[in-house]
Figure 1 (cartoon, rainbow, N blue to C red):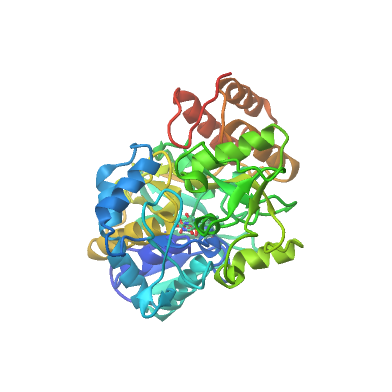
Figure 2: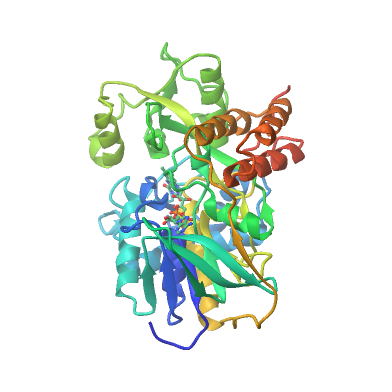
Length: 480
Ligand SMILES: Cc1cc2nc3c(=O)[nH]c(=O)nc-3n(C[C@H](O)[C@H](O)[C@H](O)COP(=O)(O)OP(=O)(O)OC[C@H]3O[C@@H](n4cnc5c(N)ncnc54)[C@H](O)[C@@H]3O)c2cc1C
């Protein structure tokens, strides 16, 4: 690593952290990730792909319209404009980094997903888009002289001096030793918090620990109540994440049915199975709450769709299901956090020197609900924007003054964590009641583990949800 600029630390090796680190060249970057192979975040699991208006007849304006429709109009208009207007150049940039998107006769293949009024989902490796993208960005980062990897290691603490970020505490995985490093700017790209819910598509590491550290440091958090639930996770017993059955399958014609084979979305929304995710998730949730199983039926799809959807085919095989002949049992599951650390379009948080990007951050681009396939795009677009800005300007380390090391509070694990995840699922799921949320908050406050960082984070989500007295986007209230 070379150069005189003040140290820049990027924590998180998913799409957002990698796009930031790559775009910060030639400024030296220390890139910190918890897994040796970097595949432990949500990015590696993304199936559908990346939205970009690239078809003839499509436009950034139309993409922006769909984004705001999904977000219930609560989106930050300038963020949406920037996201959709730079989407095509983000795809070109990814190609330059080595991402091989799926093509047909030399043109990008564009898929269709719920909430998009046009086929605009670029994908790679069929339904293995996230993994293909991640591996290409990791390779590009390995080739980049300005990036130094520091992994497997976890961010445990941050040093605030005169209220500004001045250092980080990193612990090598498998050890108890914390290494303290100077740092004038810290970028949190630590992903979402879906793993705090009993039913989730997120990997176990997507537990909101970066958000919790920012909370402990006093950074402003925003819109914590907006959690998106994916309508179709495979309903199987799993200790880790529930396997996701991509929405692209519904885009290809698969239907949601009850045990009698009746379509549960018929007559409920003009777009049927391709209605925005929260509509579909609530309908599946309500059927299940009433004690009925819900199934995704792909048995009538034409062509060799097992080749088009190898990940789904593989998941089903692992669970003894032949989706060409059998329906797949499905459940909603926590999938994406629209809320997070409050940032502006440049990734700046309320704490000087602390930046955030990707799912851990909230610049309101998704509003109250994310449009499918907009989040990998968000990671690339805002990661590049942040990286470019950081490449041009570097903060100095704050001068000597009052210092404070900030750490998350104690960790909940084992039974305490499982109970908490069930409580979050029941009270903050696709359909919420104010009464249920009040009770959940009281229960959390009375628990022996109430001082753990997971409890504090879920309590903050419940408080945010209670403050929003009307349904909006993914925050949907039913009468008590
Ligand atoms: C099953 C699934 C399918 C999806 N499909 C799509 C899709 O098709 N299209 C789309 O746009 N979006 C999709 N999403 C959402 C999208 O994948 C995520 O929003 C996005 O990848 C988040 O990227 P990120 O870089 O912010 O976080 P992540 O990819 O989750 O990366 C976070 C990184 O932070 C690291 N980290 C966390 N805490 C620490 C710590 N304390 N110290 C060090 N490192 C830490 C982790 O190790 C990880 O490397 C999907 C999500 C899931 C779960």
